[in-house]
Image (cartoon, rainbow, N blue to C red; front, side, top):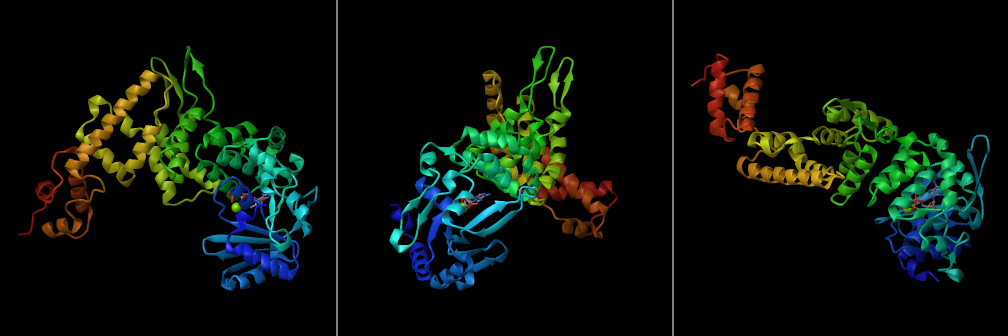
Length: 470
Ligand code: ATP
Ligand code: MG
């Protein structure tokens, strides 16, 4: 008996309404799975044997939520928003796919029909809601056993499940990553045989699953599975290109695919931010395109940060990631990811640090997290050297910040002040003087105060043949 999962008021009401209508009703899918796993189940999926929309309307009335119902006629589903919870309601259905077009034709069915069209055994479990069987678990494919064994498995022949809706391949790998489960061997072989069919799925649906993989505690698990299955090459070829090691004159470089995954896992310990995680994924994306073997130097990837930053927009566009300030943030991270660590003992000068603080702006802390995560050498000596250097840069940033207040720097002298002083209309002189002041502050030629900036303005004005108005 699973009555203890059904203590929420919604289930009591759902039960009463179902009995009044003489409809068998069940809570099904993710909610049941998450309860059994002791994870917080956020959404309730309810399936009734009968008219789902009619039931949803009655339930909304009984819950006093008639304003919070949305009906999706074409799908025969409805959603009720109940405080923070989304209740999804659907009439049990049987799906059959035409073998030519694979378009589903949907007709009313039994609970068992509905369970058969679900993606995995653990997602097909239902708990009855009617009074006479309230709390009874209906688990036709032994999902409970698979949950206990941490196994993801399709209820039907995997070729059928994956061919009917190829997004399920992404979902299998997403659940494996989120829950740290294994994919049953026959199910995984089924994915391998059906990878090409992912091409019929929209980029948006693929991205939703990919982002859930990226937001998991250890996303490398998912990327390795996507790669092994053959899906990564189709959905994210640039990332696949990072794979491999070339050896010339006995010298190899690191495998940038596994390096990137290590950086990604590293940064996940410190941040849940999707975009910082994306920055880790893309930080070395242009290494294949910039790779060279130079005599005397070995392998180089000169300019991969510039080229990589340029690749971000193309990748975001294709994958339907947002082309907004989130994208610009990722571009900036990729562009700057070498800057802090490129400062070696000899050149950690105040002015180099001031420039770094100025260029990174609000993103400085995130950038430092990325740089820290990026230190992954197999050579312990090298790793220690980089780490020591990193700590030095970090300390120096702190010192310079306390002294100079460069973070979120605002010019100590405004354009209006310059115009007023020289009685000038807006024009290029203002820009020239402002740049000179900024550069002098960053280089440490003058200090970051109004008075120092004012004096420099007078000098720069003189150079331009301007006279202050007294
Ligand atoms: P989460 O909410 O954590 O993403 P979930 O399993 O609840 O996981 P939903 O997308 O909310 O996923 O779907 C709810 C249920 O609907 C699933 O548990 C599953 O039974 C079914 N389902 C969802 N998507 C599919 C699909 N593509 N193919 C078959 N069944 C699906
Ligand atoms: Mg859900």
